[in-house]
Figure 1 (tube, helix red, strand yellow):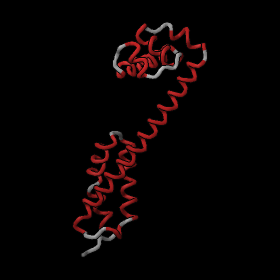
Figure 2 (cartoon, helix red, strand yellow; figure 1 turned 90 degrees about the vertical axis):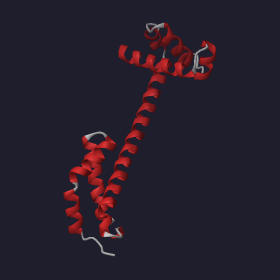
Figure 3 (tube, rainbow, N blue to C red; figure 1 turned 60 degrees about the vertical axis):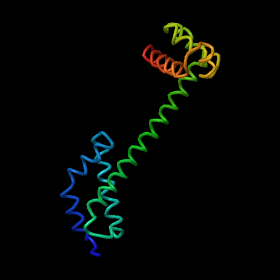
Length: 155
């Protein structure tokens, strides 16, 4: 078993930097996150150099660390999207609780206005609205989403 030196690892990284970036970019789909993933992978690789068992598997080990770093970035990004969506939904709900929104809601097409009023003002669930209007729950959800989008463009 032959261990890799820090100099050999640095050379390996230098030789594969374009390939590392391309691989990271295919996972994270933007330049800044791809660069972050490569940077994170390099730091982790040097920090764990003693764990590498064989010098011959150094490249695959490096690439696996890169893939894991890129996936971590995607996971963190998706958590932020969920939090932003929850905050947005909370703000929409609070806006509907005031009667100031009603005149604006009344400007929507009937199909959107109907589900918005039933959901936010009358506080029916998506399932209950689905049964009332005899439409699938997916349709109720999409009409709610489109109605919210139209309201945000009006505001």
